[in-house]
Length: 125
Image 1 (cartoon, helix red, strand yellow):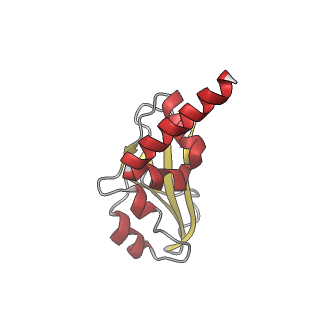
Image 2 (cartoon, helix red, strand yellow; image 1 turned 90 degrees about the horizontal axis):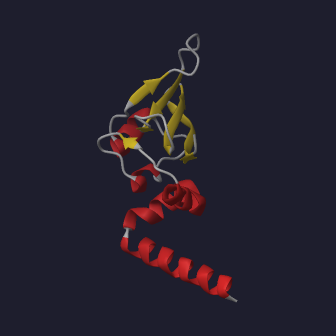
């Protein structure tokens, strides 16, 4: 019975935190509930691009152009080529871990400047 009450208390506290932190809901849409719990359990050091927001990241859809992405999210931290010999592939990286530890991954994969994949999750190193 005690475990049931502890679980309910944890859910209530988590709900209150989510209610008072608007960005939390947007993060949950990207990382899931597990991302929020992992963020509490581990020390994280996510660095985001200057104009990045979780709400805006959620607006990115497959089929958008790289120009549309940059209008919504701004310039990425890093422009990355997953395959050096394939010029039409590119990744816009909107987050990184400066200390190479646990962090929230935010990446947009482009093929011929069109969004083909939106990657966002909590990475545990």
